[in-house]
Amino acid sequence: MTVLDDKLKKVKFFILDVDGVMSDGKIIISNDGNESKHFDVKDGLALVLLKKAGIRVGIITGKSSNIVETRFRALGVEDIYQGQKNKIDAFNELKQKYQLENEQIAYMGDDLPDLALMDKVGFSAAPLDANALILPYVDYHCTKAGGQGALRECVERLFSAKGMLDKVVEDYRLYGEAMF
Image (cartoon, rainbow, N blue to C red; front, side, top):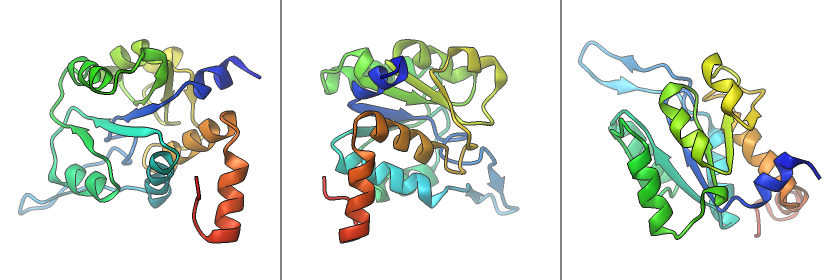
C-alpha cells in the first residue's frame, strides 16, 4: 500500500478543470465565431464510470462555453461551474453542498489557476502536458496528455487503489458494462 493509494481510497468527489485536462487545450474559433474543442471518448467513459461507482464529478473552469455545458450534461455531470476566475468559491460551495472534507476530494488541473485547489484537495493530478510550474504540487503526473486519456488513466489508478478495477474489467467482459 502506497501513500498515493491511501489518498485515492478516500476520494468521494472528483473535480476537473476543462481546457487542457478534458480537452487538448486548443480552442478553435471559426470565421463566424463558432468555437470547438476536442474531447476524448475514453475520458468520457471515465466520467460515466466514476458516477456509476458512486463518486461524484464536478467541473470548475475559468472559461464559459456552451460546448462545456452540452458535453458534460450529456455525460451526467450535475455540478458545472464556468467562468470561475478564482476556483476556491466554487470548491467551497461543493464541499459544503455535499458535506465533504478536503481529503475526500480529488482535483485534476493543468496550469497556474489550478494551484489553489491542488493545495486544498486530498489528491491532485495533472496531465502529461501540464505546465511544469505546477508539477511539484501534484500527487500524480499522468503519462497521457490533456484531452488524450489523462482522466481515464487517473480514474483507472483510482479504481485500482480502491480494489475496483478488476471488477470493472470483468463486468465489461461479462455484461458489456460496469455493474457496481
